[in-house]
Amino acid sequence: MIEVVSRVLVLPDRQAHCLAGEPCVVFDAGDYFGIMQVEEVDEEEEVDEEMEEQFKKKPNPGNGPCFKVIVTNENGLQASNPDSVFLIDHAWTYRAEHARQQLRRVPGLLHRMANLMGIHFHGEVPDEGSIEQVLQEMWKYNQTYQLSQGTAEEKVPVWYIMDEFGSRIQHSDQPSFAAAPLFYMPQQIAYTVLWPLRDLETGDEVTRDYAYGETDRLIRKCVLLPWVPTEELDVSCFTPEPPDEHYQAILAENKEKLPLAINPPAYAKDKVFKVFTDIQQVLNNLTHPRFVFTDNEGEADILYNFSHFKDYRKLSEERPEVMVNQFPCENLLTVKDCLASIARRAGGPDGPRWLPRTFNLQTELPQFISYFQQRERRGEDNHWICKPWNLARSLDTHITNNLNSIIRHRESSPKVVCKYIEEPVLFEREDVGLVKFDVRYVVLLRSARPLRLYSYDVFWLRFSNRAFSLDDLDDYEKHFTVMNYAPGVTLKQVHCEDFIPLFEKQYPEYPWTTVQASIFKAFAELFQVASSKPAPLGICDYPSSRAIYAIDLMLKWDTGRDGKKIMQPQILEVNFNPDCDRACQYHPTFFNDVFSTLFLDETDNCHVTRIV
Image 1: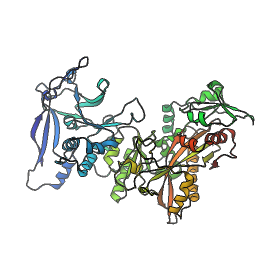
Image 2: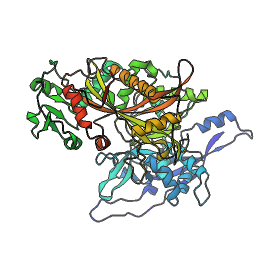
Image 3: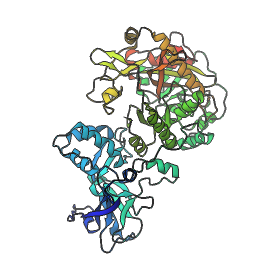
Image 4: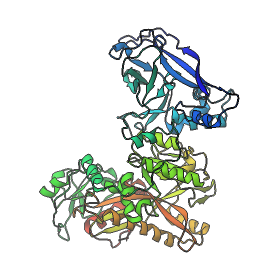
């Protein structure tokens, strides 16, 4: 089988279009480039299956004919010429969670994407089969950028597919061109800038490096898998805890200064503490007589801030008696990649049973791919959930069984990938059926060494709005439970006191006291390993630190050592300074209980249970 050029498609010229007061854009790509279609022609009548398989593994994206972009200008292109810079239009710009909806609703979009990707689609009405093919194939074409300013929602990564010209530019380890997205603020529109890296002659191919910036050979091989498939990756999926230097680097990156050693401060038993806080929920709900608010940070006994505190060293030197609502290095709990790392102290390289199998896509991509391929070979479930390291509320979080999608999501922002719980314990909603639910506990960390950990006696529940099944992975209301931030979405609320009898009616063999005991056991193990090593390898045992965290978890069906089915807690994330609006709304003494426990060491008549 040999490659032959069947035709060269010359790009159409378009006249220059200039807006008053703005740079002039000249649509002259047709003067410089052509798209070459390369087809396979049999030298023999019988097709060599081995060669056919090798052809399928060529880097050209898509299923259709192979296209390449070549220089057609008779004078070639000079890298030093400022006119050798080109803009490429984007054919489709979207956020991943909206892709299916847009393919269904935007006229002509499915047809254009199918043609661009070599997918056969000739109908007028979008069909689910073609949509699904595009959603699978688009990860070979996607590029991404994200805005550096705006709300958390506005900074969620944007994905885009270049037009037919840009999407035909092939990969090369020695590229002739470089490309980068450009967001043009005056028009609020993005382009891709394309420029040559060296002088080119007529007929030279236009290529770019799909793994730009990756210098490690193994990582490049992994990153290029969507376009250059290989046999099963010959890499161990073993993921030990990172070395000490990893945590030192995190401390330096966070610009956190560790405190000096101090003696635990002592206070008079009747002391009234002055509280400086920027948290409105505290200002509105803390009414305990031994706490008063001050606007002067310099005279405060307690700093209860929403933003992260950084300079513990200065605080320990100048005001060691001042208490603060944070612990140095608590990001080891609250940032998802760190959480997975320290959890391996409890469960080894695979992690403990109370944490889904997790890989850091920035540092453990080869191990993840090897693990994915091994599960695929064994016929095991391979649904995974990609999460940003440090975002909450399910933002930029995606469920998939598409390896290419997971590999490409690594480019948008730092992420972990966790095994998706394929057998969750479900809750029967009369109006919907069996749905996913998660549970939020608020825990109070009084000290790291000795470890003193409490749980607030009320927990909170969140429910999906559609019956669970392991399909429609982009159906938010089926697979996610965070509904209180989604506009126009039903928010199902059940108080924990009402939930427990309903749960025990549905699962009479699993009393909630037993389930909660296993949850508290998981919390205890988590905080034990988090505080088992000195900072920055663990949470710093600063005597003036106190903190509250929200731990979100689900229950999954598992098998105990005796072979019986058990409900195994699965910790999903630990949140710093959680939103306590519902806690205050339904339990007006919430912050009185929190402050009494953390700052007065008084737990009598407080709604808390000591875990450790």
